[in-house]
Length: 439
Image 1 (cartoon, one colour):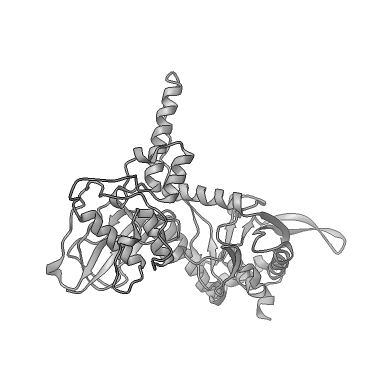
Image 2: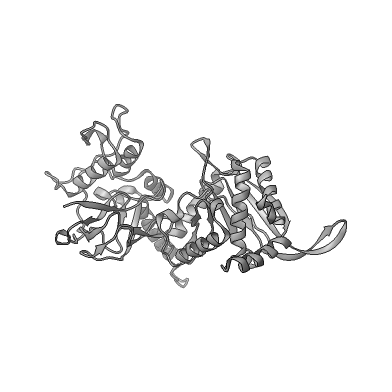
């Protein structure tokens, strides 16, 4: 009976687990390829995972509320309804593990396989493959076999398996990894376990410090907010930021918006116009379409523009892919769809991947200007303030014109001041004279 595995997705390198929020299909239900079947909460956002093939949903091994390591199979799509089953998730005792050591260079393994082996406490010398080279799937299969196999002589663990990030976080919070209960394969301690233990210790310590003080429960922090905080902290402390500010005349932009709405019949917004103009300016100055990675500048071919969207759980950045190829009506439709699904928690993995530049617009909140933090691994982000009538000099005389303040934040490792200024100048020219797009 042919099957296709439904696995816990990895949307970024640092992600270690995902949480099953809700199954949209039940075991035995017929599904079509590409149909959403389960909602997953990742470190970044809540997404819908689609069926990898047509058939029937079966072998569901992760229930709602379960936190599952990345790469683990949580269900299968089978081609016969009679063979499906919902396997209960049974907590098992930690399997015997050995404290992980760096695998010998003589062992042939892909970089991702080595990373997974380190995270799950796997000795690569014990993983056997027909080809002689160990891949990601081989490590995951070994972890599954180790978890299900009973220990012959009881547990003989010589150390608590834990991911490097979990160990580092535990040390920062003064926690003993060996005293934590791990939710990963073989009882491995993951970041989520450290954060949960840290939150518990903080609450207890606060209560012991002052029993006379009224106790109030802090609101639960979502994964989206926590990771947003971690990513912004990492960006602020590692990326050398610099800022370029430009006030632009938006008289023609206002006229263009009215005309675009009449001509397209779509609900075009200023954000749609900005996405269109930003994409055009990036096309003129491709050096801004870059990232700093592993000590070098990586250039990107596609112009994928992200939009910072505030939701109840925090901040997400859905991406309009190849924005330079879309018409205004298509941009408006894509933006409306992405923002709506972001606010409803219905984003798909592809919706938040591949962004190379971000626009953060706070003009609707009455903000005149602000400086945004670069969204890693991107090289720049544009902060957009409100449109307001201001007194400016025109031909040496004071005049009132609608203007907008743009602030470009750049990672100096990937973009220098001159290139950032050239890009911002080109964008300002397009905003002040949008008809230049036709040239």
